[in-house]
Length: 413
Image (cartoon, rainbow, N blue to C red; front, side, top):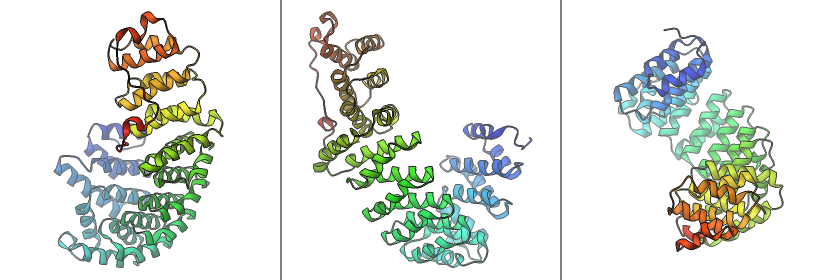
C-alpha cells in the first residue's frame, strides 16, 4: 500500500470510520508528510473505547513509538494527546519507556513525583510527557511545578501543563491561567480558556470574561461557551456583544450561552433572569439574533436549550417569517413535549403570512389524531381557520404552554 498524500484526509477518515486501524497505523508510521501522520495519530485516539483489547494495545504501542521516535514535533504532540485518551495504563507504559523505574506497578504518588522532576529536564520530550502525565497522576501538590511550566520555552509543554491544571481543578491557579490567555501561542490561549471553564468557579469565570473579546476567534468561542455556566448575569454584556460577532459559529455559541445563564441559575432566579435576557435581546437587530435562535432550535442536542430558544423566538419576533415558521412547525413533532407545546403556542401567537398554508401542508405528513397533529390543529384554531378542519370538532383537551417552566419544574434538561 502507498502511504503518500494523494488520497487526502477524507480517505484517512474513511479508513478510521470502517475500523481499518492497521491501515491508519500504516499512515502514522509511513505517511509521506507530517500532516498525514498527525491526522492518523489524531484518528487513532478515537479507538480508546474499542471493545477489542488486542487492537487497543496495538494502537497504544504504535502511539508510544511515534512519541519516542517521530521526527515531527506536531506528530509527537498529537500522539500524546491521543494516547492520553487510553487512560492510566497507557500513560504508565509511556512513562516506562522514558524512565528508569517500573511505572506499571508504582503507586500514583511515586509516579507524580517522578513526573514533577521531569518538568525540569533539559529534554523537551521528557517535559512534555511529564506535563501530560500529571493530568492523570497529579494532584494539588503538583500545581506549583505545573504553574512554573507555564513559562516553558516549548509551547507544547505550556499547553499540556495548562490542561493538567484545568483537570486538577484547583481555584488557586486561576491567576496563572488568566496570564496564559495572552500567551504568544494561540493553542496555549485556547487551552487556558478551556482550563478556566473546567475549574468553573466564579473566580475562574470572571477571569475568562476578557477572553470573550480575544482577537482569536477560537479563543473567543471557547470563552463564550464556558461563560454560559455562570448562572448569573455578570457576563451578560460580553455575551450580548458576541451576538454581533462577524463569526456565525460564535454568534450561535453566544445564543446558547445566554440561554445557559438562566438554565443554570437557581430555580428562584431563573424566571427573572430569562426575562432580563429577553429584554436585553430586544435592543439588538433581529438579523443578529433570529437566525441563530432558529439554528439552536433545529440543532441543539439539549431540550432545555431548544425549548428556551423557542420561547425567546416568541419574545423577540413580532411576526414569524417563513424561516421561523418552518423552524417552529418542525418543532411541533419534537420528542420533548414541552418544546413541542411551546412551538405550537408560539406559532399561534406570532402568525405570519402563509402560516396557515404551511401548517395545513405539514398536517398532511403526520398521523391524524396524533399529538403532533393536535398541536398543528391548535395553531389553525387560533388562526381562525375554517371550522370544518379545526381541532374544536375533535374534542381534544389541549394544554396551553407559554413558558419553558410550565412543564420543566425542577428538571430542566
